Image 1 (cartoon, rainbow, N blue to C red):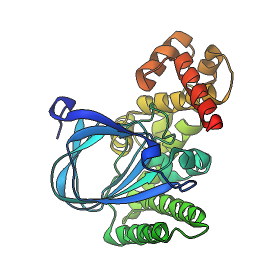
Image 2: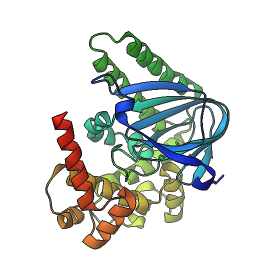
Image 3: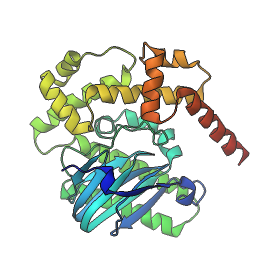
Image 4: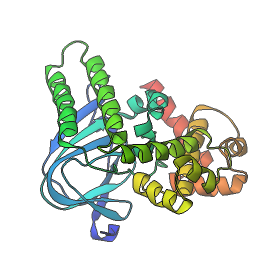
Length: 307
């Protein structure tokens, strides 16, 4: 089912400082049953669990039907909305961008994270569209996640000494649990196929600067090229080329933010042979030129130090 942004109310944007009011606490859990149709985005990541009801979730120009057991991770600055909801109940896990950045490298090692949660730097607007799992969570899996969420809610209410540490540990537990469920499957054949696809995704994550041929990815995934394209799009919401481009831009954002490497060298180290094409692609996905992105990142760093 498809829709367009013209049918959705104007866009809003939610800042982290309005959500995370307790110093050092990296997560907020919200249970929601009321939804507007406003397209919105936020500076932080949002892990969503659907508990029931019917309706649609609008993202990147398409609307996906919601069902109990659905879960998805929305990365910072992705715009999305809910449409025609009836009795929908969700749990939103709002995750501070600094937490995701701190644990990014370890999370990338998880097959489930690489397969499902392709946008792993929530602060950057280049992050690819949130992916849906190949199947909803089974009831036992959903209940396991809910137990962790309830523990997080209880810890947040108590606000005892060390709560920030406990909440961070529970959040990591939840993320790892979801990633494990993402690669689990009731049938061995499905699990094997998903694992092979995860290997292809991992190759793009690690060898992003190299020229990777579709035939090589298909061989790793034990699929034909045609089947690879179909399964890859179903798992990530992107084609392999789109996914690789976003991985490259993600690493470029890191280099622009954290180093003084010249833009043309950043382009080359991230797999772009033409620096002009790199700048055009960066602007298309990030909304800024590489130089403007670097200036804005430097300004935010200076403000945080002053604060």
